[in-house]
Image (tube, rainbow, N blue to C red; front, side, top):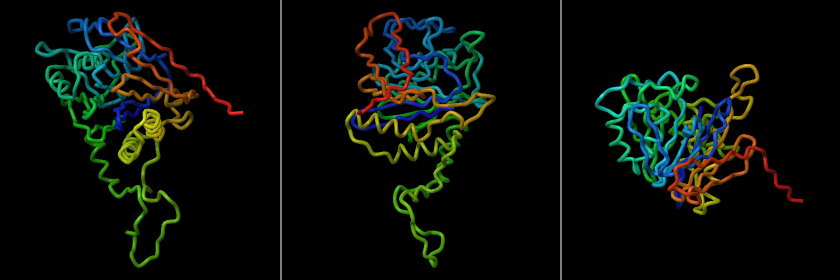
Length: 324
């Protein structure tokens, strides 16, 4: 299960928590403009926008979890079990496998409007990367510097939702997640008001009581509410350090700790990594479960006209600075 958000201060930011029970040895991966993206049903894309993001590189192919292109368009795939439905190939559309979807979109689109046009002729099909790596049930959040949408492949067809909150988690479907926010319109960042009974003297005894009822559990529907509340009420300075710090505070409000989501013997879901990309500057920041230090990779310090993937292994060991 995962959480993805957008954020805006002086610059624009996009990132996510990847919540999973195991790692695929993912790396921060830069795909230069001339790396050939090979598609199973479509012609290869031999020249495209450069990408930076988190990927599992397998057979020299970047299986992106989330990425941003050089135009500032970002995209992340999140688990969508029992809801995701991939179609059979058809002749009059571009047939794209789920693992190809992020390169397909980010390789050739620079804005949400361009994404919507491309989606009109795109058919998400049920094709596996390999026999071992089956198609994962996913839905996606896509964001440019001003707008965000959610793409959900359902049995009734692919749904595209405008995303006014810039947040996505997992099940249920996005329209249900948004409707559920109606149940929390009483939440406030300010003092609590007595609506229980005017004849009783009921008083606040703690700061923050205006947010009593904000979900704190780790389910996807609760994480959507909490991440939306925290993000929409978040206040940050405009500097890079302040913006990144605030972004990570938002993600940490819905992170998963080892031991709290027990799957089976000695197997627990946890936040494998958290990412934050400055989409204006092309800098991809990350932390891992064991390493809270923020590490950055700048795509513009690499040769973006090359043909080879550029990968950085994650720094996973905790780095503690002693002050005395």
